[in-house]
View (cartoon, rainbow, N blue to C red):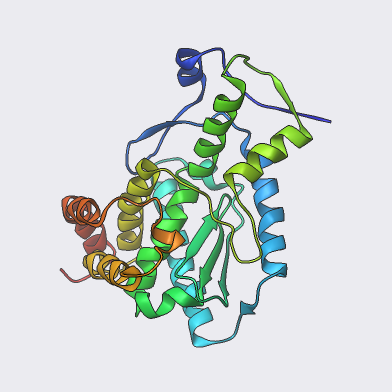
Length: 268
């Protein structure tokens, strides 16, 4: 069996046929991979990761992960519905799980498969802090960053030399596994800094739409930097913008975020 993908005949042709615009940030990106195949493999890898992990359920922390995640998910769905793009989320199947691990980490695979590690909870401290994390990670999925990174890997490997070409199962699996290094406790996509910055901005807006105070984003990121000071940088921060850039970007985006927060009933 062969998988069919748009591989392009050059940069101009690729950008013409597969340029995707984020409806919240306005950023455009090249996404040429087949979303259906990405969601299928993401679901499989998520199940594999859960099977090798200790899932925490029924505790106050586990319920908070589900509650905060669900509010952010619902806010995203309302926003996409309001702009006539509900179809973008039609194939999402959301899951929010808390996993036992000392790592300061969280992630969301394409299709809304979310994991939060217990190690990051002392840094989030409260629902607002957790909303910063979940808003950021959910944004990676909504923005199609997985497709973008896979597309980049496809073009790098195949040179964008064919349009409507085919890739075998093994070739496709190799590309997916290169982008998603799956392990017993790790299912983390290696995003680029532009994507991390976009997830910061989009996540700030989403948490605000969900009624969480976006002003808590700066204290959270400061705590994250403090938690990693003098130690190996956690994966959650490995490709993120430097702290000064992040704080500057958050301050620039905060006025709009506060508008969303006020519209959601938040007190300014």
